[in-house]
Length: 459
Image (tube, rainbow, N blue to C red; front, side):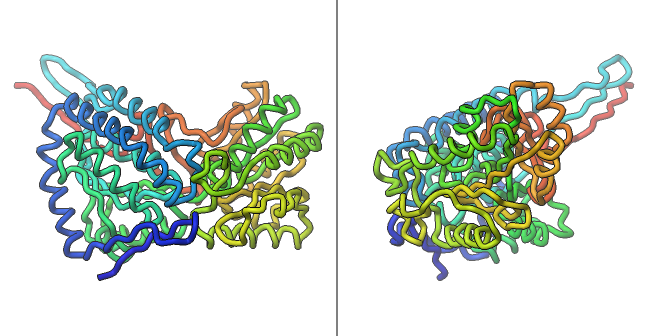
């Protein structure tokens, strides 16, 4: 039987190992989900909300186990706790708006006609969750899917196998039936076979562009609805009127938090020429104040990347950029924990251009390139010069200017004086190679339900 080994980036040891579910057993799991969906959807919305939120409570109670598990699995320092603040914020908001988001839209109610649009659950929702924020990204779909009356089959990333188990443990303890929420361990072949079988009514995938293409190929011809959040190369722009201190603190944290392994992390920064030198100087000072080391130690601010091969890709991008004329401002020797493997020193690059991979392709690591710009039009052109479009961050004191710039950006979300943040009241979406679909907000419920129209002529 094939097994998946979770190799910890902390010390290279095998932290967990699980057997892969055979295709026959995986199909049986889908049958269970399909059989359980009707009874779950028949429960009142209030009951489903209460049960799901009890699951969130139960998840929080597992924090003493989850926080060190996250460090061992993907390297996030324990000083930051788990992801429970964001999980609570998103779940609570989606629970709060559910009655209105799922309510009928009445077009006419008269003596002659009842005309309305109703929303019904898609049915069985398949969630393929990533390792970088294994709880936050998963609940984006799991919580509203369950509240809307769907059943959920969760396949978590092999790097965070235990996250899927903890989610199942919490929701089952809260009373979500086992057929309604299932955590499964699958390989790529079985995953694609299930999708090609038309096993699911909606597939949500968060991961790489290549992974998204594999999902689309598997779903081809099945007419299965999909939501895909893929790569990113999110830009930040510091205008001449920006609060410089706030911009440095916000953008550098956005670039380096979680060792740069954030879906909407900042990977390239454009600074107005009047602030450029000071911004770079302060950015270097910010980085030098970080501590790279064992994520299980309380004073560590940056842990290892999730896998050594991810760090190797970033090192290659940096080396290539330097060979092409970029200047690396951080001496890796200032971070003794950099071991040439998963532990990677943070880096700032100047004199970069868009001919360099580090400014064009996703890095997903603790490196950021900083470029000088003359004005808004130049910044807009550079920000749009990307295959990706998830978020863009503008630092300015002028909200009207931010709105004007935002209207010209090819991106899913425009943030002003903030970055690396997801507001559950706003739709989480992207464009270009970042993917397609809608998560959270009222539109998130629309993705997880289908419309049924009623035209009732009264006799």
